[in-house]
Length: 159
Ligand code: ADP
Image (tube, rainbow, N blue to C red; front, top):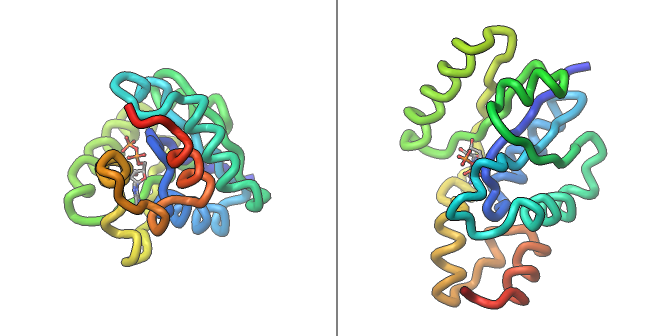
């Protein structure tokens, strides 16, 4: 069974993340999307909120599991029996950071490979950071995030 983990902050999950996840779920037997707990510092949403929103967004995809993890991604991948770390690429700006991360992970454990998927052009500019900016300035985020995220944020009191 080919298992991939899709780790990240997902603060909050966007349609760009979901696009990568859906494509990953077509390639692998199982994809575990996992919120990194070390991204809690200075976070917008709690890990529990992020996990709940991802669960709601992916409830129709059978071979996807939602989880959170502490510590090194590579150790979490091993613990879950995953052979692959899935990451998304938008623009050249993502490339350098992602390449370093992937090479560091492969130096730590060469058994686990990182695979990158490129998002659809319409999601290329979407980042959690941009979503937060638009939301905090009362803009419309409905085109960029799953419906449940939009509803959740609309009901959430602005900080
Ligand atoms: P991290 O803090 O680990 O970068 P993110 O939640 O920002 O976590 O992103 C998780 C992964 O999803 C990263 O590989 C990132 O490049 C990718 N990603 C983020 N937004 C998009 C998008 N709009 N399209 C494709 N991939 C994306």
